[in-house]
Length: 472
Image 1 (cartoon, rainbow, N blue to C red):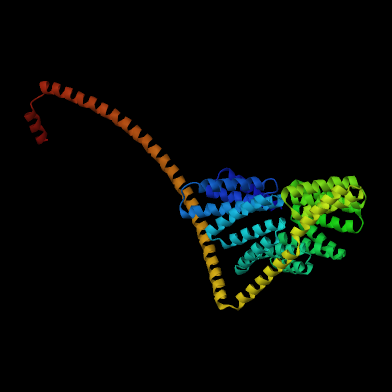
Image 2: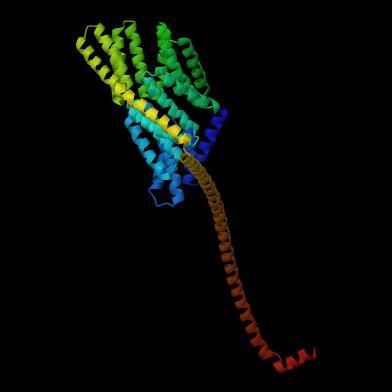
């Protein structure tokens, strides 16, 4: 962690005197990826602004592609941020904008990431068909490119869809596939949320001891990586287990810690979920006033961000609570809202559509494996990707050399200017001295001429002098 802090400090020092906008973009991107919460957002915003400013100018093709790439990277980060904050509409706009840029760049990995981001947005909105549609597109690209991180994200999201439809076996299969790839790559950032997702399935199936072991592993990994989000999620899930076990005090402590962390992260969707969990606990302990207070807060946030699952759960708790305090009108309203949300997330037609989409994908995958033509296309895609990757390396290398050459030329220019100033100064001195010499010479010549006139009048004739000189 100390080495990471030193790296961040070094990048911050470099940022004070960048010699070119491309260098500044590179430093800002590194800071956006490594700086802690509350800081990286500012660096990411600066990266976006510089990229957009340069793209508004007339650029050569190489520079344009580079700034488009940096813009795409900044949009990816902001898409994830808005998704975490529950701003699904804004996240969708950002990912669609990023997708267009990646298509213009013909960046296949970028396209896969954009499609996956769009799928995650639709997942939070309860739009299962759209979620699967974009996920399958992303998964195909990632598999063709052997892009493991993309495969992991797609498998996780598809697993989430099946889990939301109570198809736990399929969900578990996808989570385990994702976990296997993450463990192979030693990707702890991916392993932690996968462990958490697997744990939730075991909780649902009353295997709490197994579930708790998964959540505790997730908590240890998250603390090791100092991931507030991972810690908050693990605490939330551990709280659920203790609540199910009837240990309400321990559960409430875990929920409270989790709520504080999610509040610091401003993740509205998770704040809404924790609030409804706490509301449900108050309902179980017959503290109906608190149950309504927390449930209403959760419902308000969920409706504001359009998070269908949380709306459903908040409506369920409020429906039960209003019924207990003999308020049938409010209870009926919440029941109708609960049914509406439940049907939008998991109705029979949606299930059939999702299964049909998955079967179609499995069929296409098998057909592709048996088809020589598709295999050749896959090979061509891989070669094209390698070519694009090499082009990027050459681009970055070329830009690096350009920057170094620019620095060298700038230094040479400064030296030349300095030398020129010295020469000019010396020239001025020489001209001054020349002027002084010319004046002295004029005086000498005048003196000589004057002396000559005196000699002419007093001394012998020239012929006589010449004769004497010859004889000598």
